Amino acid sequence: MSVVTVSNFAKRYGSSTIFTDISFTLRSGEFVTLLGPSGCGKSTLLRCISGLTGVDQGTISVDGSDITHTAPQKRGIGMVFQSYALFPNMTAAQNIAFGLKMQKLTAAEIADKVAAVVKLVELDGREQQYPHQLSGGQRQRVALARALVVEPRILLLDEPLSALDARIRKTLREQIRDIQRRLGLTTIFVTHDQEEALTLSDRIFVMNQGRVEQEGSAETVYTQPATEFVARFMGSYNLLTAAQSQSLLGITPRGHLTLRPEAMELLTSPETDTLPAVIKSHQLLGNVIRYQVDCQGVALSVDCLNRSAEALLADGAAVFLRIARDTLREVQ
Ligand code: ADP
Ligand code: MG
Image (tube, rainbow, N blue to C red; front, side, top):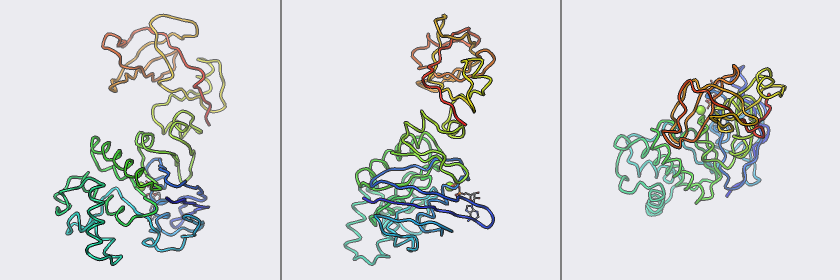
């Protein structure tokens, strides 16, 4: 269980500034996700934390001791990358044992530790296979085992699921979270996938161009985006301009007004506080149907639970839209 404090981290590559002033503290055993678009600096920040890349300014400490100038292999940090980075000519067990060999443990100690971690990541029976004989998900579990076997104080995961297909991705993310909880490992997970971030995290840092735009629980970041960027990045938000907000709702925000697709209701007859609208198209997302509607010239996405085929509203149908006003938020 470790507390990590990053203070005033800054990093440049030549003339380009990657980030200038990043500070945060991770609580012991916390699972934090860095979420942001490609190129915003997530991997660079993770590499600076691990020590694989040096920082130009700032400090990092773990449990109160400064490790800013400590070599990467002495930081007690385990790292897993998107590309598994396994040794192709070594078996799964040899890959996992690699870090322990470096520590010069005895063969018996190594065998014990490898066996325990193989069980933890559910790779039993695969120990003697080479990376090319393993599936993507199994290879990533070898990489995870290799990071865990040295009993790190902190686990860093850089888009570890991005190369895997959707079904494996979901299973493995649950598994990673479960292992992390059981070990009480302070963890930073990097992803550009908001669903992944929302599902897994104790806390999410939304990054944009080298800045942390918002930091908060999954619930907070999703329902109370602090900026227009966060609202757009979290997915399906409707963002109304000041003019659109004024015409639909009689509100004039300074920037945009956010309106979540699930914070609206479609009715087939008018009621108080409903607005006439027309269904333009619809998309089946499984348990939810996402309608594109036109409401007084404003295009909106509206999500409705997919209750039954009979309840489906046809394209072109005239409907009445109710907006949950208490969910509206101004963002800039
Ligand atoms: P992310 O992981 O969020 O996609 P990165 O941290 O990989 O973003 O990259 C952030 C920025 O830093 C990008 O503009 C990238 O081109 C640049 N960058 C990353 N690594 C290097 C490097 N070794 N040399 C120069 N520029 C780099
Ligand atoms: Mg990256």
